[in-house]
Image 1 (cartoon, rainbow, N blue to C red):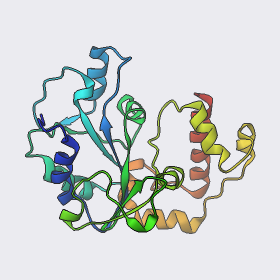
Image 2: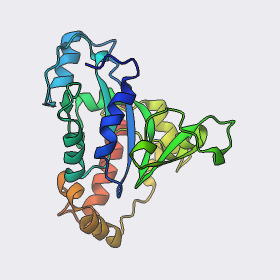
Image 3: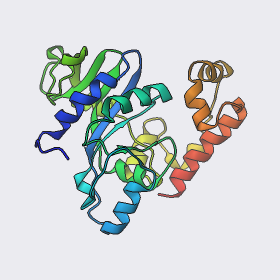
Image 4: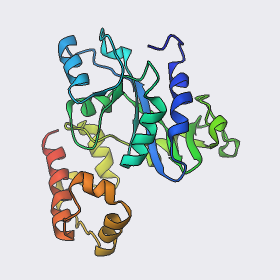
Length: 240
């Protein structure tokens, strides 16, 4: 339990030393919001895939603050765990590689914090502020741990840089906006060609081996990956 009202700042003080300065990933954060879910069900959702490190007395889902980082390798994940494991507030972690009830719940709970590109943290700032100012509006101690801060208009950050967690049930309006960015008629989206180059697949297998293995894609051919992409799109559209 963190008694400081600015608990996000406390967490990031301990989290930042565990971030690899050679990698790139998005960081989201927020309290778990589950007001319409019965307490016993929300507790079940939170704990069903949790790898727990420290004791917690569940009272309400909103007592749990989550930092979500995408695209982590196993070693990067282990570094973060080592940076946090001895802190009493660190309840544990959940692997978000595959879909789960918690992952879908976090879609509607978390907001973007920033993008870490090597030793640079990219943050959003107010739309009426000049991009050259590079403001750290959230106040987290990035600079104290060797990161430099760059910031851009929140409008551009939201449109082009914000990371969306994959949900089992996507919001229909949000989905239509996303697909509309590449095609004007979402009902005909399956007529769009999907092309996976052999060079790109080879790059993923050689340079992103850990992630591809985790996803079970190492033995996939370009045709199989093409079919998988279409099926995933279809699954999301037909369940909204």
